[in-house]
Length: 248
Ligand code: GLN
Image 1 (tube, protein in one colour):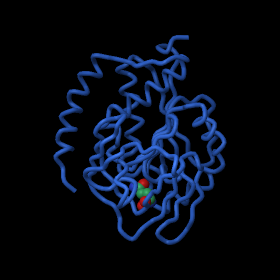
Image 2 (cartoon, protein in one colour):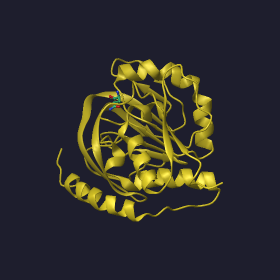
Image 3 (cartoon, protein in one colour):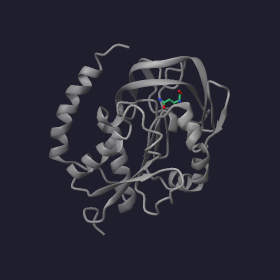
Image 4 (cartoon, protein in one colour):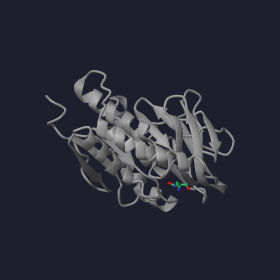
């Protein structure tokens, strides 16, 4: 089987409810980058009550208000087995803010509602009075400098064995107001508070998700290269330079 013939499926969860700050842009960016790598892909949308698709290569989902999270919570638990199996089988996933919170053990909202999560990510979230809002710059040992925008009341505590996506936040907050960590990574599942959409200015994250999907399909380690992507990333680097000069 050639990776260049059979299409890849990017599954976007709860496009209608979990899409604040343009987070559905993440699936568009993955599709465009895969095209530049000469890979064909489809963006599938999963919404409340839909049948979970059988062939999924990458899963993405965005942020949402507390009310949106409560609206999707019950349906999300109904597809828990599918998502847990994908996580265990190293399907690459990107979950942003509100969905990051719901992939953890629970999210306790600002009104004291406790929304059960999927427990795919070893973390829990409790809303605080102080909303964490503004530009974020964080340093990751694996992905380098990450830039984005955060807006959340929930503060996330990582489990003792959990691995942060970025170990040092230098502007803004990330997971919470004190740890100076941002996001989480577990197998090929990335949770992050970064909106933007996050993949627009963090190509290493986008390529990680794509390479994981191709590696899974091929059964051996693949690191894609492309002159077209390199050219695009010259422009992205200019945007990153501007982003790294931003203040809160
Ligand atoms: N409603 C959640 C919170 O306020 C998530 C917000 C978001 O997805 N930006 O923490």
